[in-house]
Amino acid sequence: MQKSISPQYIWRHYKTGVEFKNSIGLYDTVDKNERFFAGDQWAGVNAPDLPKPVINFIKRACQQRVAEVNSNPVAVEFDEIEFPNDVALPEPMSQPMSGTDRETLNALFDADWNRLKMDAVNLDGLLNAAVTGDYILYNYWDPAAETGQVASGRIGVQLLDNVNVYPGNPNERDVQAQPDFIIARRELVEDVKRQAAAAGCSKEEISLITPDDDTELMGGDIGKRELRSDEDAKCLTLLYLFKADNGHVMAQKTTRNAVVRPLWDTRLTRYPLAVMNWEVRKNCFFGRAEVTGLIPVQRYINQMYAMTMLFTMQSACPKAVFNQSMVKAWSNAVGTAIPVNGDIEQALKYLDPPQLPNDVYKLPEQLMDTTLRLLGVTDIELGNINPTNTSAIVMAKEASSMPVQSIKKRFYSMIEDFARNWLDMVIAYFTVPRWMKIKGKDGERNVIFDASTLRNKLWSVKIDVGAANAWSEINSVDTLNKLFEAGAIDAKQYIERLPDGYLPMREKLLAELIAAENKTAGGISNGK
Image (cartoon, rainbow, N blue to C red; front, side, top):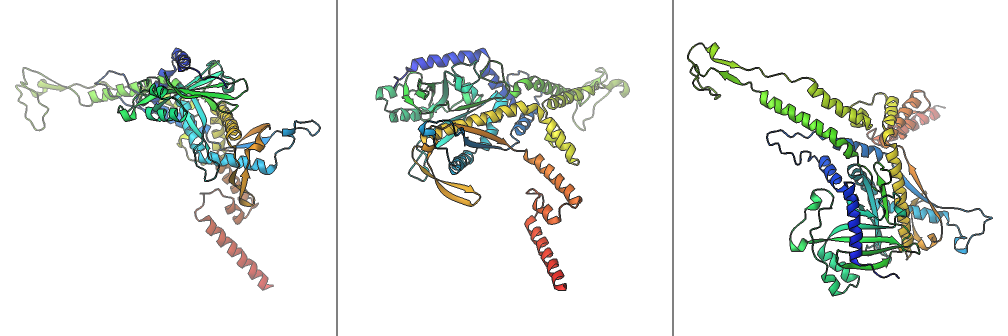
């Protein structure tokens, strides 16, 4: 076993990563992007008399792009890589996994996918990527999690901000090719001290764990603000990960001056991180966010609307010009009489305000529409057209999805990496067989899952991508309509195949149709 690494070494390594991120402006970019997405788009502008409207098309564009990337349901399937029968295999690999065992493994993944609410996690992660540039998913093992069985422990997931992840080689995009990682977190001091005590650290070492104010590198403006009470004091912790000579991932947790958990062997063979760049930057671990390129357009639109609002405020009520020798004092008070010496026509006049050019209204809207169109966000996605021509809408939908195809591919690749990390944890930490309930063609049944059968085998991970739900339903209904009109199917077959939600009380209508058919068939039989 290797000796523990000094906290000072890990801290210096961490500061090197900070310098790189500062050199590419990552911290400032993330903070600015988060502000613009949240609607805080006039921060730092010193113009007290200027209206500050926020026409937040950035949020709408990003949410729509994220929905498009995540529109297709994703399923993961594990399978053992089979070898030709005439090739001699080592003894541990001589027995291929049974179909039942593969079914159990896939059922366990599906159960964890639902337990971890991965559909919601993916939405949050994709939105994080659109705003900050990266979706980083971290797998961890919770050994104390109750399962209702003798075996305890479950796999958990956590979204990480890219500003808190420090790869050893930031010019390498491949996660598993990294020499090491540092994951920075802000944690309660009391929790960190308990972790250190549980890990067997000395009282002297634990006394070095103290509160700090190292919040300036946390993501977003709110992340830099914390509760100031002694009970809620926090400190910065660093989780250092690297691969040993035997291929296992080693880990050590420290603060700036103290060891929280000495070096330990995680028994994992993969870094438990899955990373997706929203847009790829050449020779860079970190990606480019969608918001980054939209900010100049957003600023221009806000400024144009602000100037337009200021103009209307200043010119809504025309200015009165009066002859001071004829009018001693002017008043705007309602019902007040104004004394005039001489001809009233010569005493007072209202100035006509200049007219606002029509292009002032058109240009921001045209710029917004052009930007959204280039992003593939069309009227179909925005819900601005009625689906009267199904085929045309489906074709337009497919065309509008082309700009996000590369983003989708990176998302699916990240899900595959997540699945491989999950399998790595199952093999490492499921040391005791446990009961599982799986659903099959014959209904639910209880089976025993023994992860030891997975070891010393090669596994393939397949990502199945389904059709986007809304548009596949439109296609299905359109096809059913054509088949019914052509007489290829009857009313009962048509209703049975309608997607859920299209026909209220569908089951009752089907029962009535079946009853009518039976009655008709019975009448004919009696007639014979």
